[in-house]
Amino acid sequence: MPVRPRWSHIGRSCAGDRWKMFSSTPEPRYRPYRTARFIITNSGSGHIVPGARYKEYRLQDYSSWFVKQLDDTEKWARLKSCLVKTDDCNNLSKRYKTAREYKLADLTPMESGCCRPPAECGYPALNASYFDLSYHPVSTNVDCKLYKNARSVRCYDCNSCKAGVAQYMKTEWRVVAIFNVILFIILSETPVSDTYYNNHEKYGSCGSMKQAQRTSKLSVPW
Image (cartoon, rainbow, N blue to C red; front, side, top):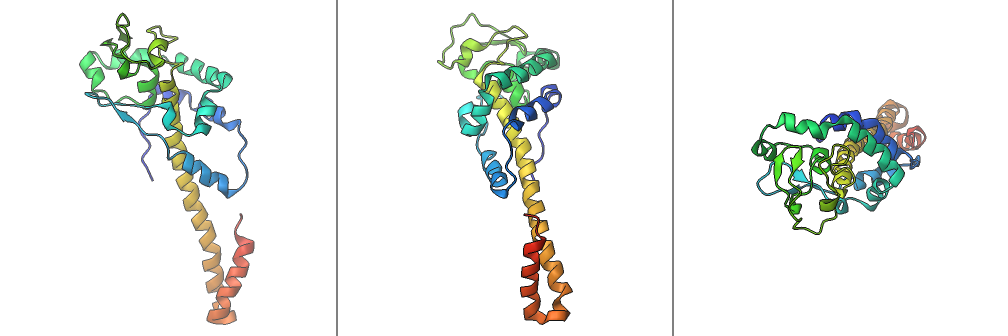
C-alpha cells in the first residue's frame, strides 16, 4: 500500500471541498465501479522540472472523467475559494527565504500547480511568492497568461492547479481502492474456508467443498 505524501495546509483545509466536488456523481452499488475507480487513479504522473526538486503535473495526463469534474465551473469556483482562503501560496515565501531554497523545495502537487506558473513560461522567481512577469512568456501554455502575483489570483484558474488537485485525489483514491480489494478478498475467501472446515466431517472431503461453494454463494455480500 503506497504511503500518503506530505500535504500542505491547502491539502488539509480543503479536503472536504475536494470530496464534495467528486461526490456529485452517484456511485453505483456494484464492484465494476470500484475496479473502474482503481483504473482511473492509475493515470497521470509528475513531470520533472530541470534543476528543481518538485514536479509539475499536466491535466491532460489524467482521465477524461477527472478532467470533466475539474472543468465544471461551479464546482471549481467553490474549491478555488477554499484554496484562496488558506493563503498557503503566500506563506511559501516565509518557508523558503531565497529563490534557491524555493527551487530545491519539495513542493506538494497543489503548491507546484496553484502557487506558481509552469516552468516552461520562463518567468524568473524573485522569491517563493513573486515572479517577474515583465518577461514575455516563452511558451504558448495558456497558464502563462493566467498566472498573476495577486494573492486571490496566482495560478488558481490554471490547468496546472487542477492537475495538482487531480494528483491529490488520485493518491487518496488509490489508497481506498487497494483497501477495498484487500477487504473483498478477505470477505470472499473467509466464508469458503470456514464452511469447508466446518462441514468436512459431516460431508467428507469431496462433499465439503461442494457444500462450501453452495454456502459461499449465499454468504458473500456481493
